[in-house]
Image (cartoon, rainbow, N blue to C red; front, side):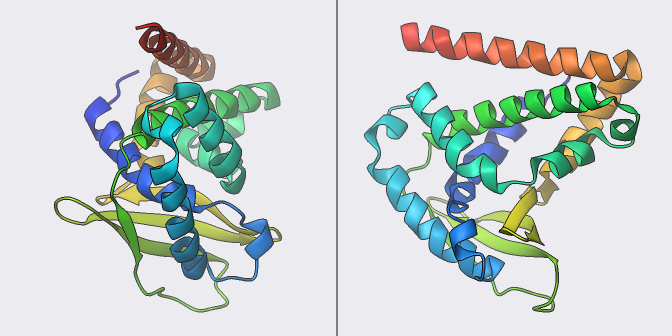
Length: 216
């Protein structure tokens, strides 16, 4: 499966400065999505900057942090289905589960690899556009640090448990669209099972690389 590694690393390094804002959504379900991201961005960035294990690149600590605090606040079924595209409806329940599990592992590990690069960034949330009654919104932010500000936008939906993310945009590139084109090529060539195998192989290679890095 063809991946633009540098683009995705850039994507996730920016996400690392902003996505960890999404902790505690249920407790603050009455907050607007922009207010939520503004307040929690500041809280979580403070945590990242003071966590020595995260800063040192402890892979297991970072993966646990991302998996425990970020992923519960993402509509991952919707994100996976959107990335897989029309083939999602043709997949069996077992295939859908495996796709979701492997895609989650891919995102968590890629995101974790970028998280330790967060140093002195801050997040500025732009005024929210749209109607207060909207059930889906885009929250636009900028990650501010060294160099020019970097665009980081969130697509969120309102649920009974608060706002949940289902897509992200860095520098004009939406995450789901990026993966959709890659997954479509794999499905065309090898089918749904071929995509599952490719994701599993990529995750296995990533896990081995992380283990080797720890030993080194």
